[in-house]
Length: 219
Image 1 (cartoon, rainbow, N blue to C red):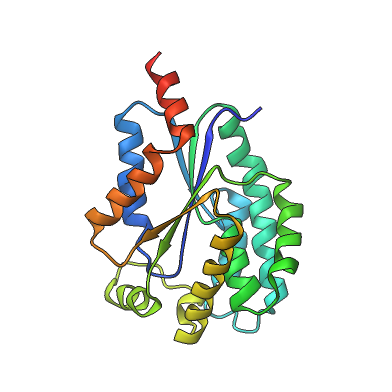
Image 2 (cartoon, rainbow, N blue to C red; image 1 turned 90 degrees about the horizontal axis):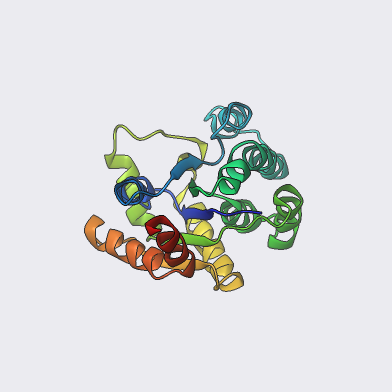
């Protein structure tokens, strides 16, 4: 039985997820919640090695389906080894990217197809969907401009894609949002950091699972 809360954070490149998740993590810790932060692909030794292969800027010859399968493989190992044990312990798990990234990036932007990418990912996660997904909706031009101005940000193979690819990613996310409206909260990430944070905190604190965990935490 999973007693924790699985929160995922999604968005295109340069959406500003990291800055906001820093603030959310501090909020949870300051209020006495047991929180674990992680990322995809990565989070554990095996998945981090797969991440290096996927995002290496020199791997320009990588096939789209190979890319999709590598993401799913990293996701499976990360889920089994790190996420599920934490959820069973009652922790709040905040994960930067999960299945929706694959649907948007590989399913739509790479042109593989939503159903095809969904199938291999459902095989990988065995029904373990997030309880809440925060989608940072940002104009691709704004996101890419943020990346180019951030000299400390990791530059990966996806950042090298042209604008039309990132526009397809946004279109992919729009489709995914309509597929899962019950768990995905759309955050307007074109605004200031404080405004975006307020949107995120509203989505979190109004969620039934937050109220349940808060009540348990106060007992």
